Length: 72
Image (cartoon, rainbow, N blue to C red):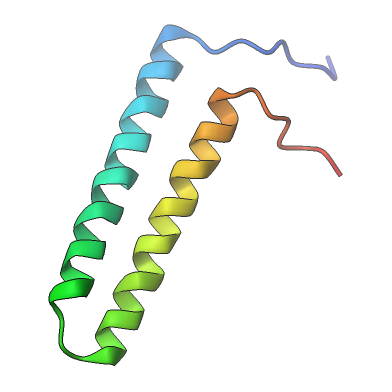
């Protein structure tokens, strides 16, 4: 079967919700600590890490919005 139905089970939805919360909370905390750090090198590193978690949040939202990830 080449086309998969656009359905998400309750269990999958709960796990996606958990993954979103983990990444959202991580990004939020890391942005907070980036503002507390005095070293610009560490601040830039923390902002990069927070941005990665933010990107994961956007990816999870795109899955929940039903956007096709395989489009070329």
